[in-house]
Image 1 (cartoon, protein in one colour):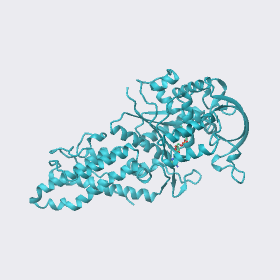
Image 2 (cartoon, helix red, strand yellow):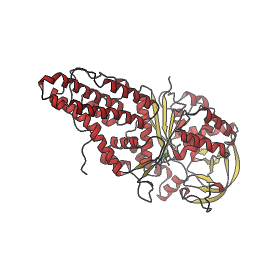
Image 3 (cartoon, helix red, strand yellow):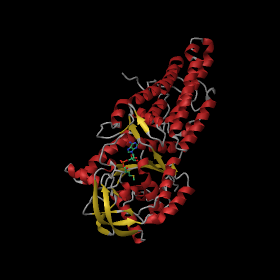
Image 4 (tube, protein in one colour):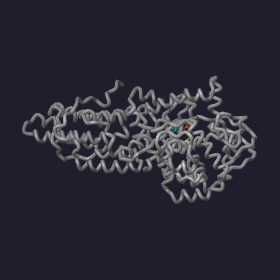
Length: 517
Ligand code: ME8
């Protein structure tokens, strides 16, 4: 059994509606997953929901529901959201799944048995919103806590701690020896800076039942539930364990609820996460895995945050971009194109409605126009029958194919789109230069017209394959119009000359219809 390429996203807090930031992260992961599959790698893509914790418990109570039924209602919305984005996730984890809970408990028992935890009293401040303890160091110069922590309460309680401190120098060493563990580089430097300049505090991994009961019980002390971040991070391993991943089964023993045949997934190849949860993923998670004796994931791919019109999106300001509303109006591929073309993985992005509209026009005027006029001319001048192959744009196409392949292998999605677009631009320029509409008027230019039409149709076919990971619906339509059996999901089909002479073409229709402004 060969190991699959295993990619995950952060699991979203269930208590809220999906917004632009959630959509962006999931689309980035989906493009990488589709690209890997297209390049011939067996792939497993996991996304899901983070459902425990005080916030969820409080929100459920406020709505007069049990936490479970509250989560079940929201889970329907989030699953529908994943489908609407056309995510190709292979599984969907909910941290309330029994298959997840049992792995969390198996890990806790193992670490407890091996002496990684101790019990101690905590006196200090707690932010329910961030589910985190705060110290004096977290106060701002005026003595208050940042409003992003929400309501902060003072408390004193007995809890279990995980000995993180012991692993600090090992982690620094690991990050230094494995430069690709955190990408982009700026984020790696951020983690290294943090680890080198401050002493790690041991991680509190429990919450007393008296304060919070919506969590996974500690297997060795029924008076406590598991800290929500310890629970949530384990999702990346619990789902492989539920699929009988051999590395996890070896570390934890067989798990009771195993579905289907065994899949080799661990270690994860990429965890796609936002910049705000870097510390949890690049400090706590590697240390948890090391303590469990498990290999570390290969990469944390850290993306930036979206703003709207230069401001933080917030429910209070009422400026949250609702991906579903945009998709309803403009189509899912226009949304996918905007977020991927606009923002590289790393920096922060800024959504503007005007920017979105101009990217839509760009799609319609460049890609849409190229495919539509190429196929329409073939229909009009050659009854929709492909002429014999002719290599005029082949060199340029092969260059873009090789470049796109390499960029996809490096998860450079924005750069790959730019490379693909250079071929779109070149082909549109070729139409202007060769003027097939003029050639069609001159019977003496019939062979030349055949040559030009072949090049345009073949470029369109190749573009469909290159664009498949990014714009799956559009790519499928481009492929379907020349009547090719789709979807165009195999990169290996992107070789010049794939379109054969005599192939009949269907009826072209606009890919991005003009919008009333
Ligand atoms: O943090 N722009 O969940 P979450 C881009 N449950 N990305 C954004 C964003 C924005 N404006 N807002 C949020 C959690 N995100 C935990 C994760 S993983 C074991 C547990 C990203 O719903 C954010 O950075 O608050 C994170 O990667 C993801 O959305 C989920 O955020």
